Image (cartoon, rainbow, N blue to C red; front, side, top):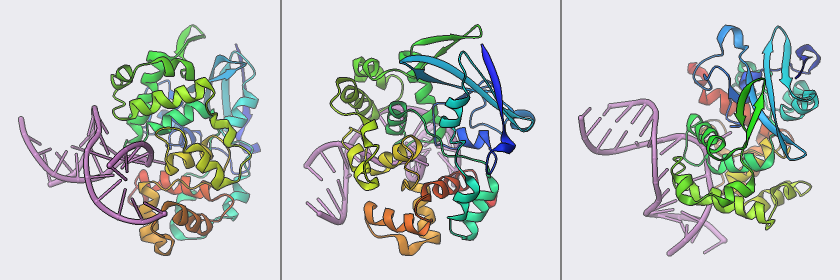
Length: 302
DNA sequence: TAGATACCTTATAG
DNA sequence: ACTATAAGGTATC
């Protein structure tokens, strides 16, 4: 086993690990205490979290927690570069915030969860988890990913415990719609199976969205079954580093109605351009994610 | 090409 | 207890 830590003070804008992994950007982390989404982490937010990543195709467990000004980690390999990538630790939050509008609700959202970062999760698990997100609450989306891991993921042993990696495209493609429906995926079951098949057979690779112009990349991702413009934006933002992507979900639509009514243009593409510009352009997705988490967790009533 | 509707399942509100 | 409603929407007509 290897372990180490990163000094949070060395990061521009610091870090809020709990907000980063429990804000609905990623459904691929778990809390060891099982209290994901349920309450503030015990004793000052220092709960251990874990996820798996694939290194040369082999799943590896990575554990992390934030305590005493440090991001501590444990793994079977040197996980520091992996965590810097996954958790967006290289992002200059101070500079990014300066690009955002100074609307009061935006300032409140940044203040409430300052240190929250945009994740860069592996693209296939991200694609599947956001296909599952349609018409779902965050706790249940997370539960679906746990179920997929439990039923279809390879077992990985770490520190005497058994974990399950997120299933491969091949494994999910081989699952039946019925098996997936048994995990309470509902109408998303055939979407997940078919998209996994598209990736497994090489019909299309979601990673190929990288390098395209933003709107072309979004269009590219909608070829996957169950992926519309909103889910495509989530994959671009939370996996492929398109920090300008602003997923138009139910929360940001409410925000548009209330604070940016001029940005409502009647269709996704035009409204997306308008709100992207209004939120600051290049890093608009950052502001969207702060707004989403702030409003969903209670906003000004909280 | 825009607009309306069905869709799985569960948690929460009334 | 029981029904209506909504949940980080998409596919289809």
